[in-house]
Length: 429
Ligand code: SF4
Image 1: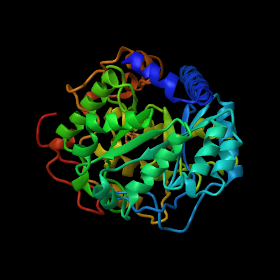
Image 2: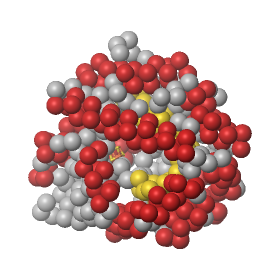
Image 3: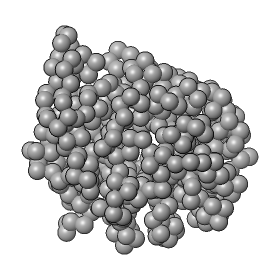
Image 4: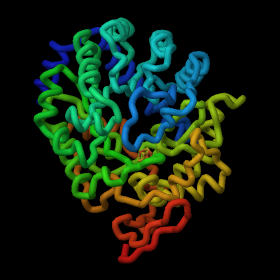
C-alpha cells in the first residue's frame, strides 16, 4: 500500500505542488505543533491550526447547515484576513482551513491566497466555482488544496444540498482541479442517506482512479436552525465509519483524514485539546465552527496572541468540554455550552440570534467517544504521525473525569425546545 501511495505521488502529482504541500503543510505544520506543545508547557496558549470562515453566503442550501447562508452577506475583508494570518504565522502557524458559506463567493479569496505564498491553505468548497481558469491559478500559486464536498448520488446530492444538478457541477470542479494537477481532496458528511453509497470501497476506488489524493469522512452533526436529527448516524453506524476509515488507511493508496481520534483510537475533540479554534465570517473567535458563541473577535484592539492567550471563555470551554467527555460536547452535552455562554456573557455570533435556543433544543446523542469500543489505527505510519503530531497533548489526562461522563444513550428525558433542562440519567454510568 505504501509503495502504491508513493507511486501515485510520484506519477500523478505536480512535483512543485507536492513539495509545497510536504514542506508548508507537513514540515511547517509539524513545527507549529511542536511550538504549541512548548507553549502549553509554559502555560501559554495559541492554537496551531486556525479555521477561518471568510464569508457566510453560499449558492447551496444544505440540510442541517448552521451558517446564515441566506442572510445579509458578511465577510472578512482581505486586510483583516492578512492581518489574522500574519499574526498566526508570527506564532509559528503555517496551515489554515478556509471555510464559508462557500469561500469561492468571496471575491478577494484568490488574491488573498496568492498574497500568502509561505502559508498553506485547505479550502472547504462545493467546487461549483472552480473553473478551469480558477484551477490554473490555484496550480500556479501551489499553496492551496481544495477539499471538495460530495454528499451522495445525484438524487441524494440534490436533496441534501437543496438545489438541482449539484453533483455534476461539483464533479466538474473536481475534474478541473485534477486536470491541472492541483492536490485535491474530497470530503463527505456521512449521514443516513449517503452512508451506503459513499462509505464504500467502490467510492474510494473511484476517487483514486480519478486522481484524488485524500478524502475525509465527516460525521453529520444535527445543528443549526433546522438540525434534521433523523439524518444523524446511530452508534453502530458511527462505529462503521471509524472502522472504514481505519481499514481504508491501511489498505488503499489514498490519504484519509480524521480529526477525532488518536493513534490508539481514543476519541478527542480538536477544539477541547486546543488544536484548533475558529474565526467566523464576522470575525468572532469561536471554539469551533458549530459553536456560534464568542467573547472575542479578530477586530479587537489587542494582538491575536494576547486574545488567545487571555481568553477566559476559550480556556473555560476547553476545560469544561475535556472534563466531561472525550467526544463532542455539542452533541453530548449542549447544556454545558448554554451554562458556559451565560457564565461569560458570550454573544450569539449568528445573524438569526438563536444559538442558545438551538443548543437548548438539541437532543443529546452519542459522538466519537465510545468507551471500550476504541478502534486503533492499523497503519503504523498513521500511528507514528499521530503520536508525534495529533493527540490530546495531555488534555484529557489533566482534565477528563470518567465519572462526569453522561452517556447520551442513557438519557431518558430529552430537553424540550427552548428550555434548558439537564439530562436525566436512568442507568448506572
Ligand atoms: S466541539 Fe464537536 S464539532 Fe466542535 S471541534 Fe469538538 S468534536 Fe468537533
